[in-house]
Image 1: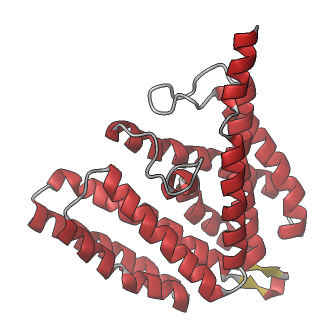
Image 2: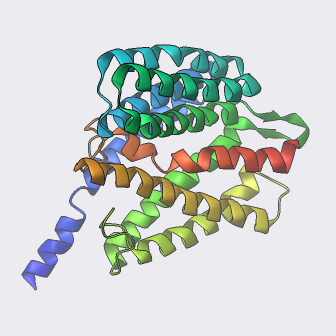
Length: 279
């Protein structure tokens, strides 16, 4: 009995550290969203550091190649500031071609081309959408980009929390035992239900005049694709034989460990909002 109680305490031993880190993360995020320039700088950091961690865990360590890759991505970051979405899309795919060409010519490691492609798409293309979401101003709909972004971030991060806590408390059946042993079916389903309910509650205030079907769809999309992003990054960590992408955030690991759930859903969410309000 005492051993069971000890195990229960051990299961939640990292919660205080995670909570303290959460407070810092939340403070930084809310400071960033107060101004478009701050948000742009914040997204640039997420993109750059996320790409750095991704290239590290996938074994891309040629310093000359990395310096060039980091340098030529600067125009992409400038387009986040100018809010030129069409050019951003065009340039990111041009950047992918250039990055793969450089890797092939100078590193002679063609098998890494796919990792270069994935790293750019996830950390530049996908994460870059956070800035474009923040800068959406749908005045005719009385909706500001900040509110649209808040809905995405709150639901995504709380979905992680729901899955974590429900999985820790009730989880029995492993959902991806070979990739992420701590993920459980109970945690995923619990997170999905809680995120969908929360989406309906928050959607009324942050995305008014839409049906509960729309709010539920947003919650389901965020829960499912957030989970997929988490598992996808975990698969790379598993191949690399590491637990965290870095030790940047106490209790959470690296930056990618914290934003992995955003990697898949962010451009999908942007497209969904565009379809609902702008088209």
